[in-house]
Image 1 (cartoon, rainbow, N blue to C red):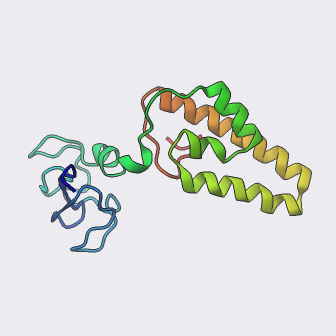
Image 2 (image 1 turned 45 degrees about the vertical axis):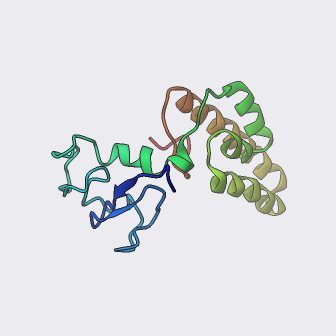
Length: 156
């Protein structure tokens, strides 16, 4: 815990550990409600895009800081390899390169379940979906964008 720094709950403004996903004072998941700046604890208005006390964007930087353990991907992604792997096993690129473990597992299990009902159609559909998702998210990672757990190619 030496390396962890304190931040402030985005709901109640109380100081919490940087690794905390849920505030132990108010019980709200971080980022779900943004009433306070995560950086300094200053109160934030509903449409405010800049903390007037410390100058950070509490909506943008919060995700990069608080959810860094889930969303930060280092290095460049070879989109050609990701696309091919995504076509063969749709859930593998999210797990290997995009830090989206839950999404990846869901995309591995879904074709198996759907394959029982519509074997050929579901395999083709999931292969196309996996390839497009892997390609588009790989391009976004290479442009320096961070991804949340359930970001798909159509999310901005």
